[in-house]
Length: 297
Image (cartoon, rainbow, N blue to C red; front, side):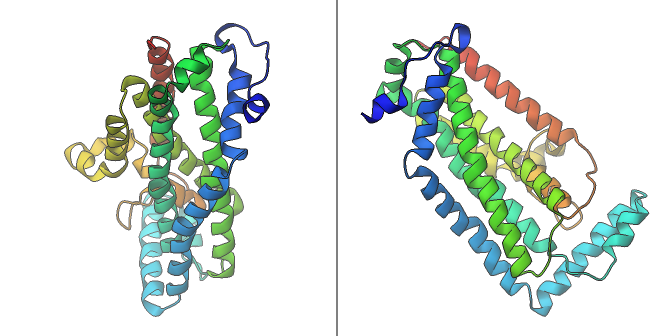
């Protein structure tokens, strides 16, 4: 009965044949089971649990001194760029939880990235190993529709459970514990960059899943790119400009993550990392579709 409620007769045609049915199947995995509850609980405890503890401890004198030092670094950077109004605003006397915002986006981008890598490798590799992919594709469904449904279903689940809910909880924590209301528009924009960062790793894992038949290379390569940014950038510093790391990772006190800058109402120094990450996502999706369309079962 459960399978009948998920798979229903459809009339999709062409290269998207069966897409609607397959998307319903993916959505059922997220919202028809406890998966969405589990994901929300896990990442709320990890991401916002750490944020809550940090905000509480940030009330002591040492944390306040730290925030002032970072504020001065930002104001100097803005002044050098000729943005006098932004620099003057940063010098104003109001609470600015810079450290809390930095930590929130680091954990939102890196910790949840591990979960995204796991979801991505399960999306294709697990389906191939269990024979589910072959069974589904024996029905009236195209291979392109199969891959796109995996992307769409997981992208929606990640957006809600790992980004939207965590962002809402974090904003409330900043307001209640930190005593400051972050600019809503800038904070949402920062969440958007964090989501783009997670899409990069989701699509990378899905692409690798179409290229490999075992989980090891898929999860290994994805986690290597997620956590190995210091190694790569030490060899080629320009990689920061074409990879998603700077979107959520702050490099020292004078180079904040782009998501952090937006959440604090600051202008971005460049849009190149954003454009490059979006292009990488398109490349990963394109390779996934091309490779899976040639998969033999």
